[in-house]
Amino acid sequence: MCGIVGYIGNKPAYDILINGLKKLEYRGYDSSGIMIYKEKKIVKKTKGKVADLENLFTNSNEKKGNIGIGHTRWATHGPPNKTNSHPHTSNSGEITLVHNGIFENYDSIKKVLIKKGYIFHSETDSEVLVNLIEDIIKTKKVKLGKAVYYALKQVVGAYAIVVFDSKNPKEIVGARLGSPLAIGVGDAEYYFGSDATPFLEFTKSCIYLNDNEMFIVNLEKGLTVREIEKDSIIDPFVQELKQNIEEVEKGRYEHFMLKEIFEQPQSITDTFRGRLISASHPISISSLKKYYEVFKNANRIIFISCGTSWHSSLLAEYYFEELLRIPVEVEYASEFRYRNPVINKGDIVIPISQSGETADTLAAIKMAKEKGAFLYGICNVVGSSIARETHTGIYTHAGSEIGVASTKAFSCQISLLLLMALSLGNKFGTINQKRYLRILKELENLPKTIEKVLKSNDIIESISEKYLDSQNFLYLGRGYHFPIALEGALKLKEISYIHAEGYPAAEMKHGPIALIDKNMPVVVIATKKGNYHKVVSNIMEIKARGGKIIAVVSEGDQEIEKLSDQIIEIPNCDELIAPILANIPLQLLSYHIANKKGCNVDQPRNLAKSVTVE
Ligand code: M6R
Image (tube, rainbow, N blue to C red; front, side, top):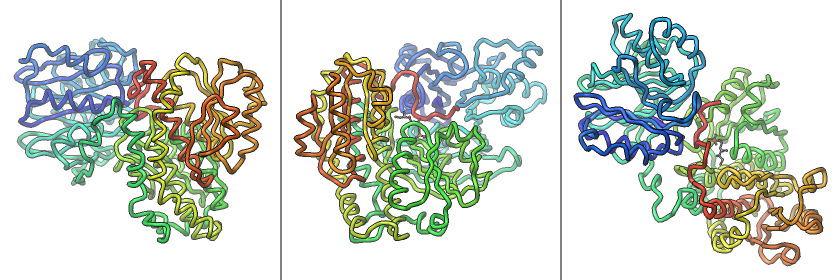
């Protein structure tokens, strides 16, 4: 994880770096630091947030300089303290480096460098690299660019790095393998970032570096990008960014998470744009159209993903098997990549990822590709590694998601998965035409229906107040609501630190019911249709044992209202749409509980938005 920024040009670098780091804090917030150069180098770093770093710059002279690099850290090697913070500086003090990723063979390189007399202050792999670069400069008598090239040939692992040599302060060098790195191209100035948000307000011209590429930016000679393996110069693709700066600002909302929850009607409109014109038009998904035959002849579909995206995958299994009649498997990417799975030609592997950078998902993709699978990626971040590593795919177009807890990205993923299953099912004749049209009509109205669900915000906020002291929560759902129960529990635990578990409601009697007493709140998703009456029985079983019941029900339900302590209503709808709606009150419940408990909702402890380490 970690976020890196950099700037070289004629503007004052300090504000660009600090504001850029704030935008990247979602990637890690254990510590932060920056280096600024003006005749001499200033390096400041600290444990904690970028705001703490800002407090260290009390002297305005220290902020001067038109070149600099910065870092916000999610700790991997060594605890989150000042010494382990980036930027790291070489023994001579001349080379400075920021790094996102992990060097697996750093220990053996460190031993060699120690024998040569190098001294290490931190426990990080990054400090090893900066000294290795320095050693190469000295022994091979090369400049920074060549030294970075030789150093990267020696290291094993994942990285995005940006490096500066104070002996040549008109130059910045960087490289990537496995961790993202974007270059913003301005007018005789260049910006660097783990994503484009740090420079979105300054330039829309962006180069996303590919794996195994490095760059040298020299204020006199401009930008050169090289392929590391082939050691050849390449002509990078300069992309015009479509994102707006407003997307990455909180606006009138207290937190990004709340803003992103309320953005869902718009996000889903964007997901459907051009794909679902209206219920009377055929669904138009170009990447599916192109590969209909591949899907038609598929032996099975395997979804791979992590966290919330794994919950989307689980719901996709229900959607795809119901509507397509193709066998589906759902795998945690982290397990799949290490367990030598059987993959044959004719298998379609569908990775799902908001960030498109999750290390386990990326590694699982590479492995499945080598074994001959067809890879169809579903990502939110345009141009991300997963989007580029797959044969084809589709973007969710949920917009920037900054809150660490995924909300709108999940809603867009599951809405898109339903749309895809409907499109394929209709084409293959595996779905009844009447039902197809009815669901399509409901999907067309989905943004408006979600607006109605969001009107329950005040009711949900008042419910949240009753549970601030709860130590545990259970979330129950059956059928399409089972993945939503898992997602509801994950959302609560990651932002409020309350222990929460999701279960299929019928599993209660196989163990978890032993936990029920008057202190156990149980959130039950119990909408009409599907297994409604069976869920009512499950609620009675909990009631009989004194549990507190918060039920998400269909509008007008009176039966469950009598059994529950609190109810939250969602509009009546098809059972395939219900999970998309039922999830939204659970997002709000988690948000209000966490916020009222005083938790950092957008940046929960120990987490980061983009998990680029395994
Ligand atoms: O970017 P991805 O969708 O690949 O991320 C996967 C998980 O790390 C992510 O969903 C995580 O579980 C979120 N914090 C959940 O809110």
